[in-house]
Image (cartoon, rainbow, N blue to C red; front, side):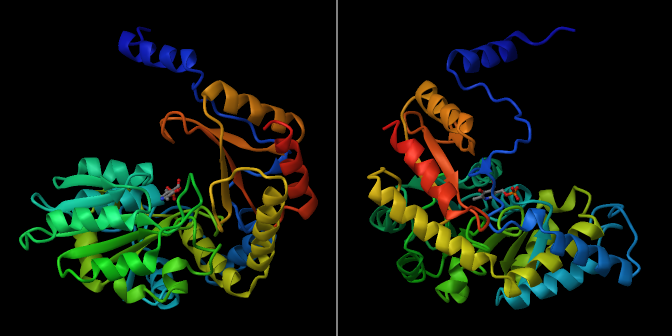
Length: 375
Ligand SMILES: Cc1ncc(COP(=O)(O)O)c(C=O)c1O
């Protein structure tokens, strides 16, 4: 079978640049790489309670059977969306099949021709892809830099005919740091035509129900994206916002419309995982581990990007270099992954440590002491 030459060349280039991706196997190393921050993905309690809920409610079905606009709008969608809206202190929640779907659905459909999107230069690929599908013009601002954002706003916000959508993450996925959301929302809310959108993928469950709620900024944001595949350990995502926003997305977000809905089992898992988040003490254990990691990396004088979240990154320039250190840590029993371009900018290749409630203090000290031998 003929494989197109241009595609072959692109793969060969990845090999030459030492950046060819392959699918790894499940391993038994100490987990410093998964997004299962609270251990919910492996929680038997959540698994059993979900099973019990579905059985008690006679919901023995395997699939949604269609798009939510046709046959797929299972009654559990309504129940879970109400639960989410209440918990997240917002008018509505609209569930998407994943955070990727939520972001491309939002950014491809909301900003119109003549509108402007201002995005943090390190924004997640799912938002970039949504922006690429949009008819609006887009400009990046410097990472977490409010001064640069202000300058961009000054340039664009005077034109009252355009709407401006500003997007950031409350915890950056490949850096672990956070913007000053309070100042950002203050700057943005000076203008009627500027709207703030915050992706809370890596904050939900780590900082309770997300940083926007921790900072009581619910009424200052146009939309929040929460995803369930990380702290909640399951699957799916929701866009939180006004009733009009929900109505708009139901009508125009193509990644919402042209896809089969989630299975009732997925919805029940989201429902139970949220309940567990409120009563479970995993979050406290995670926060203690984050503090321990920060203390130990300071003691060992390791140069990590400043972060209070569950994600901690240490830059080692060069694909070969960073892959080699990751491999040596893996050989010592720690699952630490190298992050390469295009996921991060060239020359900013890094080791990304994800912390969990179930890591022990000894594991954290050990992995950092091993890392210290390479720097
Ligand atoms: C910031 C951010 N937003 C969105 C997503 C996508 O979420 P999901 O994995 O649910 O598609 C991710 C995960 O990779 C992410 O890190």
